[in-house]
Length: 414
Image (tube, helix red, strand yellow):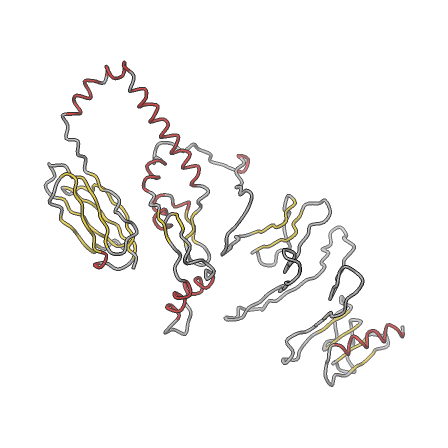
């Protein structure tokens, strides 16, 4: 008992509670910084009477002390592990939750400008490749995860259904490159319903031709943050989102699609993230590419069949009739280049019998911002001066004799 008392006394002195009162009750429980008449609950209590379910209870109530408990190690031992602290729960019982360490940093209400970290861990300057801020290992043979992350508040985990180094229940976001030997998507028919083959209606090949493939760089995030936060004491939502994107490489060239454009063709492939930006599910574009190739293969097979001597003979009269028809079909083409900064060229084909043809430019609010009367017939073009419009996305429509020929999108950057 005397040894235990000395040990607790030394521990209490290490907390550095200045001018605190030390008391020991008849049950050998120790209190530091509590009233002499207090009824102690834990074996060692600092600034608190403790709780019946804790052995050591520390309640840092001094506003000048940023750390409630500090354990530092400077000496080395003969053991291969040099630990500042060690917590062990060697017993796991049915129906109970065994927790090695529980860490919480929460508030009853949201605090703007504050930050909270359940666990903050640093590691560095050990052998190259062996520095881990957090090391999570799944021991034993039962299913689970070395690291489990969730966005569901207050949950205690779910059955992972397998053994994983990491299991995340919620969206996972990275500002860097994600490297993996393989990326798979759950696609078992047993987890699907309303299964239907993609038919020719709304042809994937046609829609594929409508997709505008672009090359681009990410914007200068830091400059955007400075621009949108200057002159205002309140940081807007877009500014906060840009802060989250600050690690993007502005000099690296990328290739892809514009989410707002793809949304008009395949809305289900575009999602809005929590930061307000739109994202694209590129993986599910692959089946559409496969279907497009299948369509092309079918068309090639038909053309091959029509090239046989029998088909050529039977279709000769039809071909003669076709040669007598004006070959020009009213057509509107995608502008080149797109996106553009200074100017862009919009080509179109107009048959000779068209009386009136006009190219209209609209913003995304449906407001007409420009019109170009086309007097020439056949293959012709219209040049759009970038200086006459503000930066943004526009729709352009060709109308011939009061009928819409086609509508396409273009993007003007500054």
